[in-house]
Image (cartoon, rainbow, N blue to C red; front, top):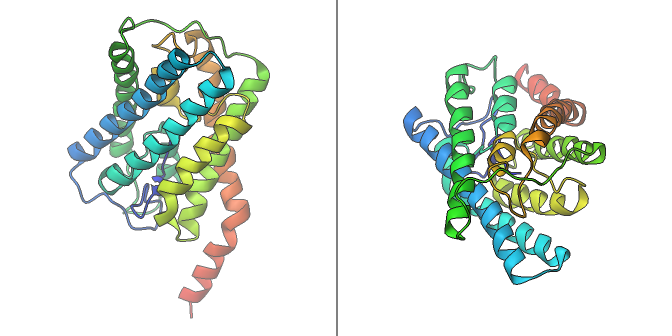
Length: 259
């Protein structure tokens, strides 16, 4: 869930400033890392907290998922819009790694130092967000989830969800439509809640954080490694799809520049 290459910048606020694009990295690294930590914590608090609230208000699983997904859509869109101009609002290690990979030859691209700072902050923020949500609703602050999600069809769902997220974010960047990222990324995650079997975690940091809550949005620790592996595979597949679908933009730009 969740995301940027920023999220895709996710905004014109450009989420991730992927290679060759403008980057919202004028802010000092400390501020950017703080934005990633706070943003990921808030995102997980929204996901977990709305899940707890939903189960307390209704026993209908469909209504619970609807409430959870709507809260996530609104929360993610706001967070991307607010924090995108600072850090790119990745909130997602897969997005951060994809941003680094696509811009590795660009002096202005995301560097290894930033990656090494962003990812731990995202994971720490996700864990803190889950603990905060549990505490707000009177749950034990730390309780390992017992919600098994190790079935093969759920793992396939994570590949699809993550690949689609990366395709969306970097596709928007390729077509210079990152200004639509807050709405587009949030909308995609909301839809993926329903069309993927896994309800679209699509985010390693969020996956780790959700293992710390034995509530509606939780995932058993034993299921976490499988989800993380599939999310990384989905990230690679997403970048491959970006190259397949949008490579003509690079060739067209190069041809125009040579004239």
